[in-house]
Image (spheres, rainbow, N blue to C red):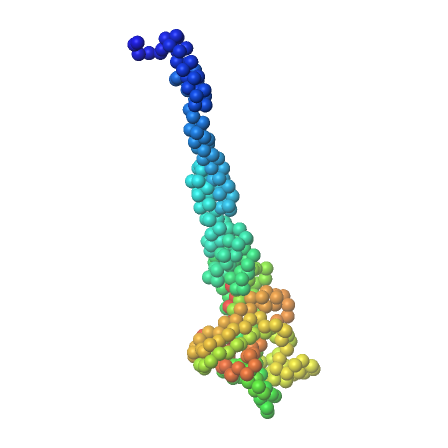
Length: 322
């Protein structure tokens, strides 16, 4: 028979054989060979391919885990597993958004990560204040330096409790029993601008003698007025109510900062974080800070404002957002 579509009689005969085979093997076939239904197993494979399409939804889900709206759009545009990967990548970019130059791009934790000490806590929505480097943050803070306007130390040693050391070139700090020494330092902050965020405030002193062994030095906010050339272990100034409430100086109950030392060399800086105190001092009364040492700690010598070396004198460094 020539090639082409079968004769109708032959088609009917073929159909009978087809149904017979179907009955024998339990396979459903079409009457027409060119329209035969594929085995259901093959159809199942096609169904599996369809679930790959559903994988496109996984791309959108991955974008949700990514954590950024922009990542969501990018992930949804792709498909299947590739779409999910693109969404996650975009989300990771968002998590790193709290950098110094783009802190506002990250939210919450990203802002906190952005609060680096170098930038005063850039990170916009970050709430950390992670000690110094927190606060509002800005990329180009204004830096103000204040030199001490008064300093002295108070000596607990017997027969020295009434002596004033306001003209000395060194400040002493000691925790030795019956020979404690507390140092006082004050600054004129009348020119410090108000209404601006303080991102950092550092009280800096300089060692004028080496320190061997471990020390712990603390700085406290002073609670009453005192005079550089009159303050002693017992007295804050002259006139009515001149004595300290407790010998050795009136201070806040808790230190503004404590620094642990393990040796120090001549000329090395000693920095205290006093940002919270400086913020609280505007516009409150301000009397400077007192330094003391942990019990039994040996004496430490720091440069006073009378030092012959200007760069060694006590300094308060304040950084403000413009």
